[in-house]
Image (cartoon, rainbow, N blue to C red; front, side, top):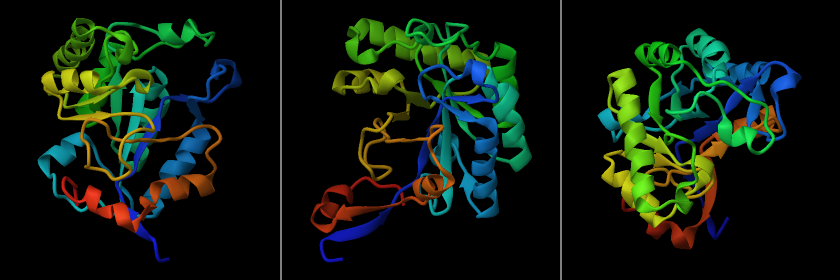
Length: 253
């Protein structure tokens, strides 16, 4: 291997919903089956992986990321409490849930033909937060920020942060861009809102720590096989060696 180098990065996994019946799956592949999720968590546990949150990274920014994984869920669906939470407790795992704070169901999804899915109640969110699940921001109404004015972006981003902090009694330090809608103006507003980290979907540097406001995530879908999952969470990828020098300045080891 003369022109590529094996490089390691923290895997940041992206999930949305957990389902256990066909009637709620909808047309968009933004769910995982409950039994498949448990297989994935069981694999992580048996193979010595540790789940961390952005709170952990803030407290220890130079931690060794080998065998670490960061599990994230977008939107804050009710199944995060009824199906995900029992599994997290069973395996003694943590996660980060990005909350849409001023809607009680997936109104944006319903507009696209998805079934109506309720969000968690404030009580459920608080219980999970008290347990150690990190709650982050995901706007107030799940709007595409890349299509908003700066004033509207500020209300959605900073307002959501205020909502999360009022609910949990903790700082909201990380944010997820709805639809992956991101540009430099959106990133600037997110920084101004006093978040420390922000996650995208499949955009941003492959190396974790290069851009804390466009952290690339790895999506897990119903098509993710166990073989694929194992590869995704390994943290290894290949970079052409001649560009390695571009990614050596701002890295979390």
